[in-house]
Image (cartoon, rainbow, N blue to C red):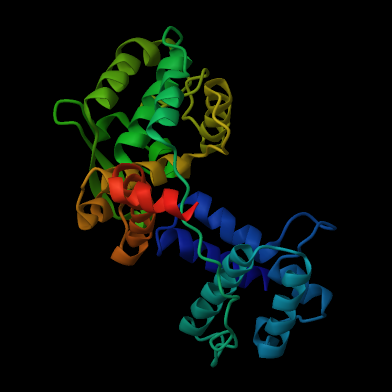
Length: 313
């Protein structure tokens, strides 16, 4: 089973073009955490049940595994993600001819609760963008990162993988290699260009090291490519400094970008293209957020709406 897993993970990276971050998540969902910790991964569960071959897995074992995950008080979304990894593994095994029938084909994931993506208000965003120091190399870098993510809606792995040659400051364009190795062009506005130019001219030269990464756009104090974890930690510090009472993480800025674009009147398909969504349905979740914003504005602005609200009280 370990050999099959290794071949499957190689397939995800080499043929499907998944990022190392995504492959690592699939690995964790299938193998689970370190021994003795819960919840167990799919392979750990099979080992505990004495199942020695992936061919021996049937619908009953899969249902028992789902029941086990639910007993661990995991969210439906977490359970669904783990089952998605198992489902993808068995599709691969079927494709390779290792199995003749997919046991998880008719197994359904728990129904997900619908959650609207949270985003920052314009006032919160302005405080966040102003939080990094304007005088230090790291501060200039952090301000440039925040400006670019909000200006473009890029994913964190797209940010960390950026090289100098992908940036065109003259046109405000960035060539991005997104999910599934799909290339797209994103745009950044004047404020992001100004911050990025300051970082490139003043901040980055202070961070460059002879042993560092010469091509990476965003580097740490040792001159090495900045990691996703470093950006996540930076966002937490900046949010605390800005006095934002929310959990601020990289994808929240992506949500904020999409929501503010639609609030500003952008076409849904344009936002889809900028975000790199393959399906319009993925982007449409943001229309619910803007509809909620529209209702809020309407109730606050329309004189008859105010009167009706007052009468109701």
